[in-house]
Length: 107
Image (spheres, rainbow, N blue to C red):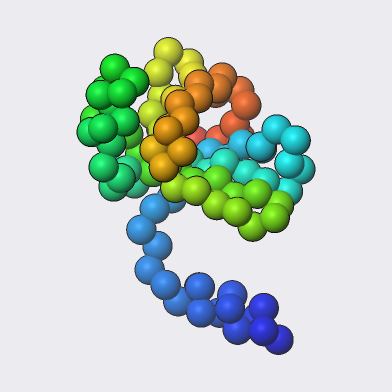
């Protein structure tokens, strides 16, 4: 019953972002990386300077693990890959787009 109430409450929230793609987290069968279509709202200036990188058109991303840990980040596509940044952890990763399941086909 509790899950039903939570789901009903979530269903009433306005949707601000569509899921663009999802990908698994290596070594965590229950975890996912989720790429969203809305603009990244994190302050990336320091991260960009430290990594000599421009993320001006980055979009929002997050991941969650099977244990419920989560982190907000940003992503952008570049030369057939997905560039993922996790500023709070100072992590930059590049993954082939084939590692993600596209949820939006109209892009």
